[in-house]
Image 1 (cartoon, rainbow, N blue to C red):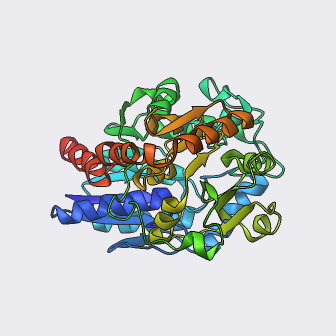
Image 2: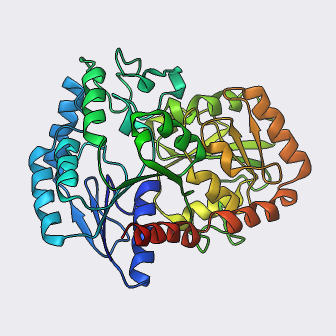
Length: 401
């Protein structure tokens, strides 16, 4: 089989690593795999296909900021990309994030309908069936069910400064994304699958394939010197990890939590910007973004508890990574974040309730990390081994053909 995957990034971030992991499994089994991507440099990928360039990205960003036309820029870059696809002639096209300032969805889906290739579309968020946003839980919006308009998140990703074009975007997406003859929707969480069924994408078969992680990389690391380097050897370490610490990921809850934790406790958050790092309270250690899996595994292993105060999320791989390193997880009752946790390896608390976070931390602290670790590791091995999870995609490819 010849499989073409399309995603905003390749080999970096959660979606980029998912794409490259699927590609590696395909190659091991004797199939061809190419990942087309539009942003940054490809990492850990044997065969990549770049879509557009930095200038194309900047122009697409400008079109989004000024006219709220995200997904409808990058025409030249997309035409050139489609020419390359025509030459490659894939058996299956596997879409991931088609948003991200790099691709014209109108041209792409006109081509997909024309060539009538089997398509799998893995949704990593809600952008495909809204008129603007990638998530809407934060503002309790349900316009996407009937038709977007007057978007309450116009200035959130993908931000528009002046114009609200959510109504027209919604109608265009509905027309473009509907009527693909041989397309299967895949979601990493049951939560997102249920939303898809309520949307205009509900005409398609929807399957759930959980995200998987590399259990050879994410595992308890006893040789970590993370605590010594940061002078927190005798502290109870509360960890948070995200690629972008915006409001949606719960940055403010860590700041609030820092005012309530004990003197023998310390917070570590990974993925902050330099500006955020400079403004953190003294009992929060900020670490800028890292794409080093080895470094992340050491930090997860050094922590006593992992906290995910996300306000909107699909099926965060950070939860899985923490579990695989033997660290119990506390998460807000948000989206698909709760689906990877049970009572043996973590605690779910009400969204936005910092006092419940404090109580949950004390429960973990009193019982001790070791009382959770083995069940955390077992759950990760039983349910989230990337080889098992992503082989489900290979089986799906075979079934489609």
